[in-house]
Image (cartoon, rainbow, N blue to C red):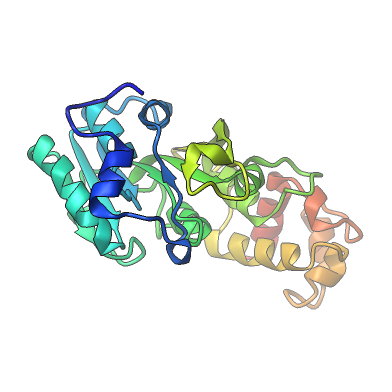
Length: 278
């Protein structure tokens, strides 16, 4: 395994600091520094960029981002056990790594990084989807981030890039594809991690669009899509009946059939319906 820097191998770091991954925190550590380097490169041109990393653990991806030339990495880690290992990386890259102990859902990233920043993370499985939705639904657009390069369970990654008509197509696909270009750039087997998860993983890269693909009020779109996919087996006229007393007429006005189901409605159709209902 090639070393990115003069720091010890990750297995040695984990043994030294007794960093056994905790299932309760959704932890699965990626130990191959060749793979972490590939993820860093998949995020685009890192050199000179400000980067947010969530859940760095022992710091394999952190090291890769710094080795690729990131001007600053803000690493938010909830597990205090990992802080001594991350402190060693801070010492190896003076002035370029800031570590915050805490919950990424509560940190004001804008107070620490220069916009637009990149987000690159092997997200803890138990908060990954919630973080993604928050990044995709800021108060205004374009967002303070330029791109998101995120590790998910492969099933979740497929939901983000899914096309209409597929079983994976749903709320995540609509929210992601409305405001970004999303693609799966890497897949990883369970054995790449310690401990190995029960599922394959995948890295999704999302590049923020300067404006949404189609006009729509964000809150109304979120509401319509959530309601539609909450009862995805029902026809739209039944799944969305609580949104308006004349929902069938509204659906037709948006160019949709009341007897269609949510999974066949394209992004443009959801946006049209949000405009009609707005």
